[in-house]
Amino acid sequence: MKEPETLTAAAQSAVVVVDHPLVQHKLGMLRDDSTPTHLFRELVDEVTLLLTYEATKALATEEVETLQPVEYYVKLPADVAERDVILLDPMLATGNSTAAAVATVKSAGATSVRLIAIIAAPEGIERLHSEHPDVNVVVAAVDRGLNEKGYIVPGLGDAGDRLFGTK
Image 1: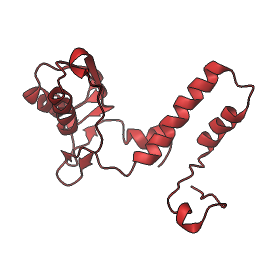
Image 2: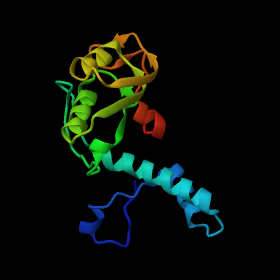
Image 3: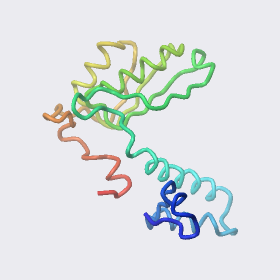
Image 4: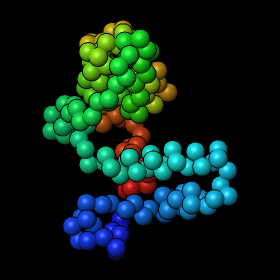
């Protein structure tokens, strides 16, 4: 990441400019006033996702030593009790973070909750269903289990790093 050269040193320390070639390519397309509306919308979504990854990559969602969830941001609609809630978790591993997320939306009033995950470990499914047996889980695969670090085996590796090419 490069820092903007026109800012004071203090301001530069508070700004992260994501100069990854993919982000910069998409930014160039956004700056082009001939980019059609539908593509502009898609690009805004894609760049926002990439910037969100950068902004949140250091935030803890699970304490590494204990594998316990850490809540850092919750913003739910006021009428969540009247909605069907679909939670997204790319990998349902230990189930700790997912069970906590379900508890959070239920405590806000949600009564209809589903989970979509790309892959899951049996331990994660069991953990989730031990606390929330009413939550339906939709996955592409249930893998063998977890290793000693709590990672799914065979799993996907670090999905975030693989998605964004950060390792």
